[in-house]
Image (cartoon, rainbow, N blue to C red; front, side, top):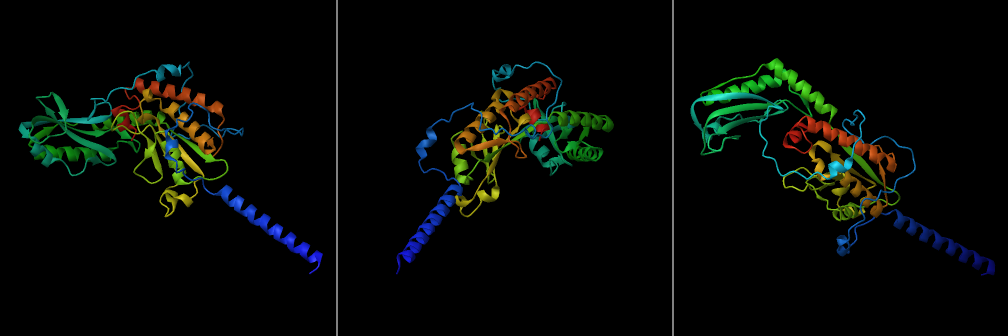
Length: 364
């Protein structure tokens, strides 16, 4: 074998080694980032209030919202809202004339709670609107869902005026009347229904207000280079206090009070979450969502969203974008925060403060 042939063989072998090494490096570089097995790292607190890695590309618009808040200009000091205490759980609940049609029902004689429960209609909806019947507890001097062992003389039936499916219409009002009348007949009582046209008009007005003040913010965190595995996303989210939700590919940041809606929601591809080998699944984007009307402003939900987005963007090498995938410059955050303060003020003025029982019912 000549020196020339030997040189060709060595050169070919060297090229083959370089190609194999490059392919291995490329595969490793593009493989989804996996969760670290070192659980102790989870105790480290990520830096807060740092803006995530924003690109310099043009703004594609504010974060997506069901209806973006646009109100008349006036000076807003966001610090006032941030200093507000989170309220204790409300006693106000059940039927309320602010968002419900209410029909009094007076029985001819006292009715046991067991008989009232047996007379309730099988469904608790009139069309797409929640329907309820309450009895007045004389001992506790409050309205309540009929309870076994109690006795009632006064009842009230109600149906919600509006929700995110729209305003109460004539057909739904008629179904409400039929259900309430059937209950009244079963307990030998007399109902007193309000005027249908008046209540339907009231429902439309409330629905218009709700539509104009219903903000649901959604941001996208997109991987800059290597994708993420579901376990990697969950590990980094858990360090910020997010926990797994009941739906695959969904994590939530719990509110400070038990039984309240979550502050924030993080979601990603459910198919990747349910994969036979999740660590091999590639997730290139996650969504961070805030349902403004469901969370009290004292929880500082938008500030928490920014902190979570910043920490995840830094830890996972992600770019914060709007829902359409357009990078968001840092300068867009303050105008959104100011608009939200105006929205909170509008809801407060209507006695539908964000996070209240009535607001959670109306915006559902």
